[in-house]
Image (cartoon, rainbow, N blue to C red; front, side, top):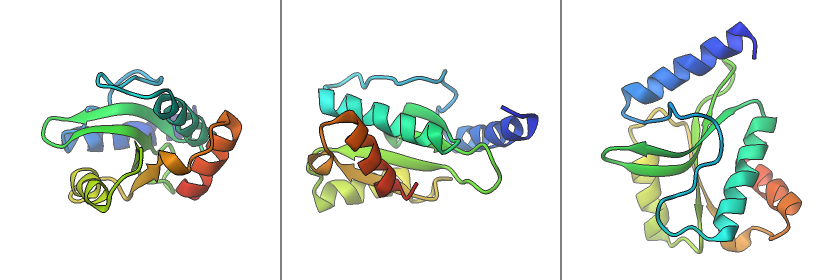
Length: 138
């Protein structure tokens, strides 16, 4: 990664940290400590791959002491990108979606919080990535 891209990444990492998000984890895909289905874990991996291909740095299971954990966070590496959150939910209700937006979007540095319904995501890993990419507009 170039110095400019590193600088942008660390700037956003610092911004997230100032807002209470613990995004300063080593890269990689981290499992949730609760129950996590195989499809959820595969979708997290597919999301990670899609975001890396779009030149974002990616963190998973990013926590905040009051807001909880976000499944996936896209951290910018260029000045034309902005950070966003991705939640992977099985059959989310309007109440769950509203709760996720309240906790992970309102009053945060994230420009968007995508809630992806895993019931609509294909099982094949390549198709899964393509579906998630479309949902994220990438």
